[in-house]
Length: 168
Image (cartoon, rainbow, N blue to C red; front, side, top):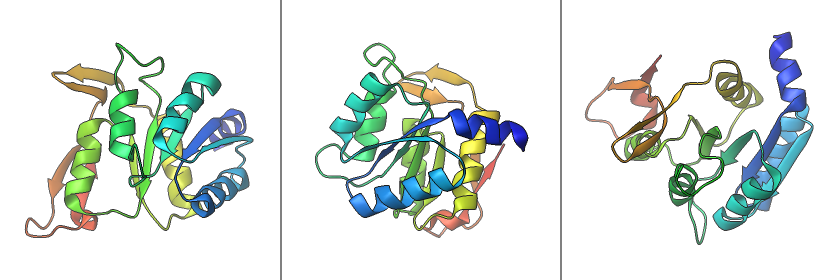
């Protein structure tokens, strides 16, 4: 646990969400777990610029935003030919837990997926995963991102993310 605490203190996190209240909630959770540097962006374009300018260690990203949404943001970042930090860990934090959204998030290259409302423990666990057990980045056809976890349906007829099981 000490290693995680030490890493969190040095971590620079960018929170990209169009809702100021949600950015404040996530900032409060992060600072409460020891993260000292939290940057914010109110939309996808500002988030891309912040990555280029501030070189954060991780991004916490909303799915639905006006202009450039979360998936478009991830596709831009996961372009090693044109984007300077294509390997940056991205945690999708969203209220959209539908099975199709979870699958799309995996297919576009997010590292972790969290549903709102989020707990400190859940956020800390996902940060621990990207910091202490990072998955290698791969290119496979059009895909560039972390080696995907395998996933299987627990209940095939459901459209809910809670029925998906992620296996390491």
